[in-house]
Image (cartoon, rainbow, N blue to C red; front, side, top):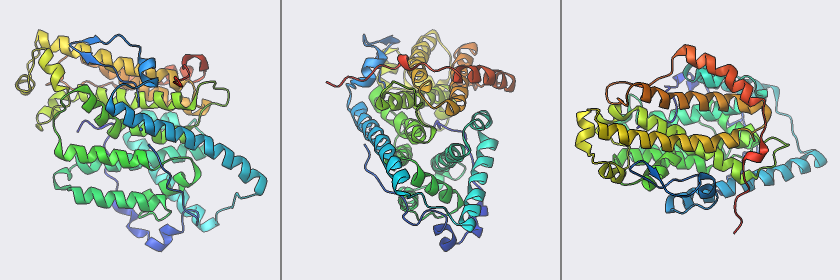
Length: 405
């Protein structure tokens, strides 16, 4: 699988946490398991030519079956955020903000700090950006990152060949438990605490597990509609998990739904970039994450990919695929400016880094069979001040209100 995030194998230090101790780490009332449902921008695309429709309008009015599924999730998550705003006002009035015990707080701090260490080791650029966030939001983002990483590791790590659907069933049950305030280990404890404090719904997490299930049984995608849904499952979900924690700027005039659509676009863009970067690596594992119909229209086949020869047909095909990924990035940029000021830097840093991977593919003359496109350390650090500069700006006029028709 062309994973959406960097790989990490979480150590087994959590063995020292007993179940009763872990159960005490989260608020006694646990967290509500709320209903959820799923779109992001979709571009119909074939042989390098986009259909005549703007990305923004497609986001607001999704035409395809996959997009409709995703759009329902976006709408429900947006409604959940609005609901929590009302609940917070009520809590202030009624005094429902209960302090945690010192012992539980210390254990949670340790769990969150370990999540931060994992993030720092495997996602350095993103981690540096999170240091500008408020401490509570920073820790919550770390907890979400680690859960996503562990989930991806199930089917994309060293033990992936031994993973079965039943193993994913057990992982999903642990997810249900942590959302109900019953974490299994220290990493789950951090996430369980996070979802009790923020309007984070369980559905994007479940959808990511669906993506892992898809990877166990599927190695081809007949068209972009199928690929889009896969990209949503394994990467678009990350945006929906994160925005409730990062927060939307108080001065933003954009609708909540449009901000979530932009976050979804960033996840899709990142995953498309991963796919284009890892064509050769995936092919050696018998996997092709490219729309079969678009390959055929370009005069290419699976056999051409397995041969790994860069031809004019391949260059032309890749130019079109890169163009589509950049369009998703363009849509995502509109939403970054709507996030709370302290949360924009890590998102901008990640976005700029991934866009440079596409540049690297072009520099390699579209040879993603034998060359792995990457961004060197110097370029990574050079992008940080650029990301910081963009994070200081706010442009709420960029995101249009979605159509209500």
